[in-house]
Structure formats: structure tokens, C-alpha cells
Length: 213
Image (cartoon, rainbow, N blue to C red):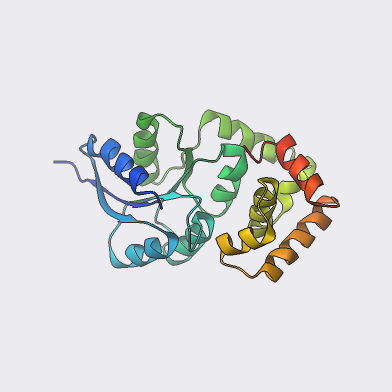
């Protein structure tokens, strides 16, 4: 009998967790040994058990996926984390990889891709789709000409995407568990860095660069 890959799933949607469990149950070399419904719980479970791969959603309440990823990599540098997201690759993939993720998959990906990606990262390799590999290559060759949003911090970038999606500072503060004042600071910083004047220009920028659906 082959050694099974022990997987921890972290996603705030019970239906998604159930669907992932079903997909992975068809593979004899994998077992979903735990489920977390938010980032805080994912960290607690990571500390309590032995895991081969963490499969984690980018957008979660309490502590989002990127923040959780950074904390996990600080505590368990060798633990492979595969990020899963409903957001297109161009929104969060490069940030996730820079933060220590072993791979990035969109939730629109075919089930067999998920299985392939888990096997790959469990072996210590990275998993990126062909389109993301191309984007990474372009990012390296065109580093001096990167678009302004790629130079933002993770929090500034999150604030940009949320404002461009039509959310108010109060809504953003609630979702990120921050004060409105702190979110205002992020907004001011990103406007300055991107040389934009107001929310309308931010929204236009977000739509133009495919940062909002």
C-alpha cells in the first residue's frame, strides 16, 4: 500500500470543502485528514497534526489566505501550501507564490489538475499552470516595467481590489478586521503610489487591468 498524502483543506464554504473532499477521495494516494473553515482554525489545526499538503482558499474570514500562508511558512517552512481561489490568476497568483505558496489553482480548474497539483507540491515541487508560468516569465523579464499595482503591499492591493469592486471603507474595514482609519491609510498610500486621485480612477484602473470581475 502506498503512503497516503495527508491533506488539510482550509475554505470557509462547507459546499466547497465537501466538493474537494469528494474529488480527492477518488485518489487512493490521498486522504483529507482535516478541514478548517477560516485562517485562524487552519493555523490551529496545522499546529496540532501532521500534514503533507495544505489546500487553502485565498479569501477567508478572520485571517485571509495570504496572511495565513505567511504565518504557516514562518512556522513550517517546508510544509507545501497549495492556494485555491475563485479569483483569476493575474489577481493573486504571483503574490501567493512570493509569500511562499507551492502553487496556485483557480476554482474553475478541472478536478484532475487539482490532483496533479497536490501530487506535485507533496513531492517538494512547485505547481503553476502554463498561463501563469508565462506571466511569471514576463514579470522577470519586464521587472522594470511592472504595472503600478504589483508594487503595492498585500494590504494595499486588497484595499485596491475591494474599492474597485465598489466596497466602502467601512465594508472593507469590517471584512479585513481593521479600523476604518487604517483602511484610509492604505487607500491614501495606494493612491499616492499609483499616482491616482480618487476612487473613480481606482475603479477604472481595476477594470482596465482585470483586477475585478
